[in-house]
Length: 96
Image (cartoon, rainbow, N blue to C red; front, top):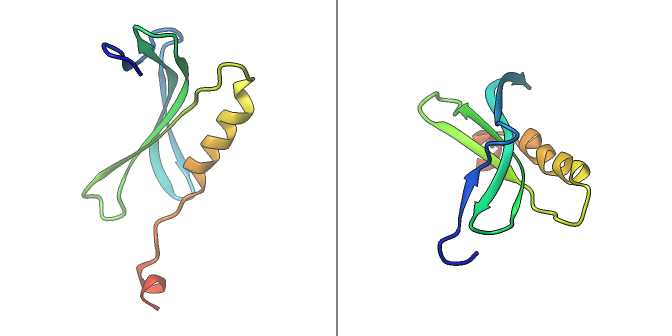
């Protein structure tokens, strides 16, 4: 990126939020469009926010896509699968 450029959330299409439950985890998911001010870069994003297992922290995981020459649907599905597929480490198994 160049001087005086920065990433922002696009206004059109407007970001939207939905509250979901997946694999026993409640979370908020935001979908929208990111763009770079003073440059010609933009693309879709997905953001998920949820509480840590102990409830003391909020975890935010985000996926941003930039693929100017390609159909973005398949790429977006791939990065979304990363957000849905991770699991908390089992501390008991990690000690062995």
